[in-house]
Image (cartoon, rainbow, N blue to C red; front, side, top):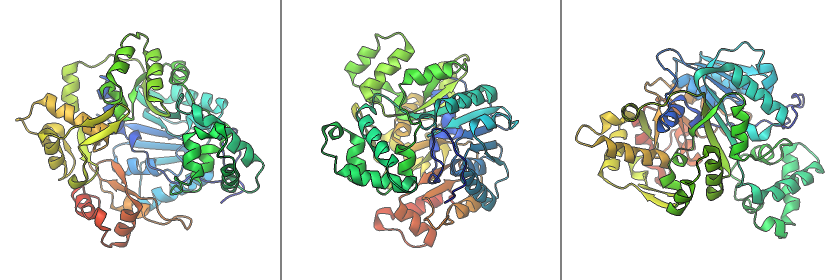
Amino acid sequence: MRSDIIAAPGYLTDIAYPPTFIGSTAPAWLDFVALLSGIERPGRRRAFTWCELGCGRGVTAAIFAATHPDGIFHAIDLMPEHIESARRLRDQAGIANLDLHAADFAEALTLGLPRFDYIVVHGVYSWIDERSRENLRRFIARHLAPSGLVYVSYNAMPGWASDLPFRYLLRRLADRAAGDSVEKFFSAKAMMRRFSAARALRHSPTAKTVLKGARQRLPPAFFPHEYLVPGWQAFYVTEVRADLATIGLKPVGSATLVENFDSFVLQKAERDALSDIADADLRELVRDYFLLQRFRRDVFGRTRAPIQDRQRRRELLACRFVLTRPPSAVNYSMTTPAGRVRFDNSVSRSIVAALAAGPGRLQDVCGRERVARDVLANAMAMAAAGVIRPVSPRSAPVSALNRALAEPSGGSEPPPYLALPCGTALVLDPRLSRSLRRGASPPKTFAAWPEFLASQGRS
């Protein structure tokens, strides 16, 4: 831990954030969101460009750069400790197409960077002050390519409303505690347990999980970054849309794939109520009230003509997907705010059976005997459920990257991420991850995983 890390208004810089991988910021994932919404994707006939603002330790950027050798990748973070960690990972994995920059968003404007087809901002917008958000928007306005896509995640209202008293009291108690941010958080948590019966905290979902220790499997550094950041704010969707409209961006869709389908997440009465609202932003705001939305992963782009339905269907069928778990572990249903969505049928099972041998395109894995409409409907349900995932049209070697990811850092256990050649990574159960690193047989619960991962080309 460093004591000389630069100060940043509205953010914590005395402790490093844990390594994280955000699969929903992949180029293919964002392309898929655009296709779902009938919007043209960024062109891929040339080397594409991708940039992450607030990259942390650079795990996401490193995985995507290594698995997309035809892309040009940049990642920016204000904490030198994060960038040093990212550079070690990059160099150990031999990644040549990733540049890393220790800079805040104002300094990033002076770096002379290119225009980007994809700009991603995960876990940042709600955790910085207004001046930093303004500089972030200026960076996007200057560096987004005309057909580019922007991913922005943030804590959302009204879902956080019942947790605001908990967050406020936790921060006030932490302000009086001694030590670094981790020590302050756990000191405040210990004190808050004595107040957990207070009426203002009884209805806080976060108070219930954090104070009872239900989230203790998370690294200790997660908690102060999540709950003690001075600049933290939860936003209504209309506020973020208004912010990004000032730089010419319009909503494209959600990187939380299931939320692109009203029929999956809303009851019929809710869908009927929304159908009477003509204003798209107001409709989305009311929709968030139905969903009690707590966290949004929004995709934006500049105004451009929509693609025709026939072209959209053709491009969706040409998308390449990977199975995210062994066939025996697939559950052909998902639970959503609207209830249980089931997709247990011969089409879904044929898709799973085909992808069990490795990533493939929908048009290839199902053959001509199936109706394209049925294939797409079931594939969309499985993508929304996380059973399958859109991935890069090409594959790349990942053995050096996986060896680098498996290296302990700072005395802590390596994160349980396993890169796949198709342009993504899986977040494994820590018990499975440990057995794979040691070359040991996994617990019986995960007996099917080694063969499955071998079929996906994990080496």
